[in-house]
Length: 309
Image 1 (cartoon, helix red, strand yellow):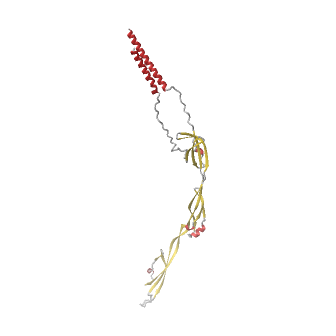
Image 2 (tube, one colour):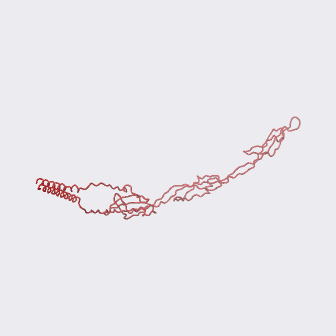
Image 3 (cartoon, one colour):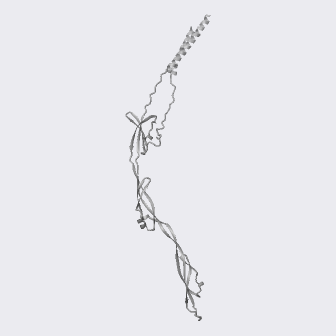
């Protein structure tokens, strides 16, 4: 009898311990923390080839809005700036509307210089200035205006030269010659770099010899020389005319677009129905206790049959 009680007590203890097991089984296993990083928070991706000048969020009538501002040329289509959806700081937005504002243009001014050339036969600045245009028009790189001539800055360059020849003549006198021999007179002389050749000699007797011969004491020769010289002369000039003045260009205004995106509400998470882990563990514990109790009763009956025999 005592052995039977002991078996029943053991079975009961096992059932109690197994019943306590659902508390452990029902405890949820620890979950890993997941951190979601939105790369658009600090480094927004450009829309096409254009970067926004400003990005900010607003709340309007309990709606969370994301706004982006772009400043582009008037030729840019706003559809190039639009995004169907945007994610920022883990929040998704969808396109809502757009605002357009035309920005004023401006005027750019600068001083430019230009040089013009004309053909002239004179080197005189006053004569050239009277011949030249006093103003010229300027049209380049979108700039336009009128430039004025600076007469004091006019310079000239030779535009061409022409060679020519000229006759050079000279007369030389030679005195104290012993005779009227032509060999006593130079056949060539030089004048201003031109070589001249003798053409004629005129003799003049001077005095009478003291020997009573009646011959001249000496002769004076007057020699005529001639030759051809070569030179060149300027046939014309190129006048360089400096012009300067202020020119301007109009810079067209740009267009500012503000794109508005509305927050997409998150979809609700549905909880799936199922059997509680606590009930499962508790049921398993009761089944185990019942099995253990049955095993003990079977063992007890077998002992009784042995004792009876």
